[in-house]
Image 1 (spheres, helix red, strand yellow):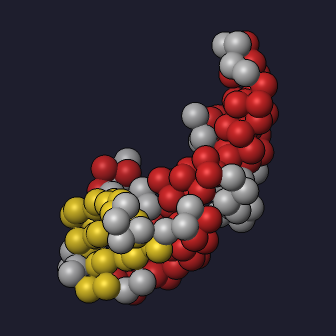
Image 2: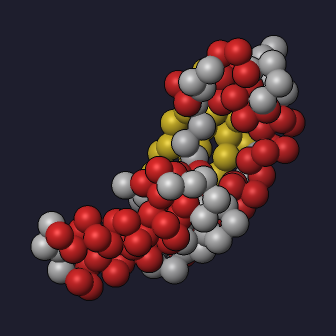
Length: 153
């Protein structure tokens, strides 16, 4: 539901999606205070406006920004010139683990460096990883990033 605003436009989709979600959840009879939590999270999840204003927003940011995987590539013809498709296609394994004892949330990636350099990942996703760090801190966790067996955050 958090990306429903993409139906209208990619630009400002988080805010558009929050309004759309409000209408849907209200019609479903959801409690207004719960609706407020959900639409606030949706409205604060996009890269340019992301901020963990509540626990649901923090969880949504973590889920959304760690979603990097090969199956996100829809058009194989764009891999050679679209860095996002190339990086997503290069991810052979992606896993998110929560360790409640150590209070960490870890994104573990295996990136095929013959398809895309690890540096390409950082070029487009560094901002997202920093958002993950902020979101994890809101939840009193430490965000960790492991790529090809190396701890990078």
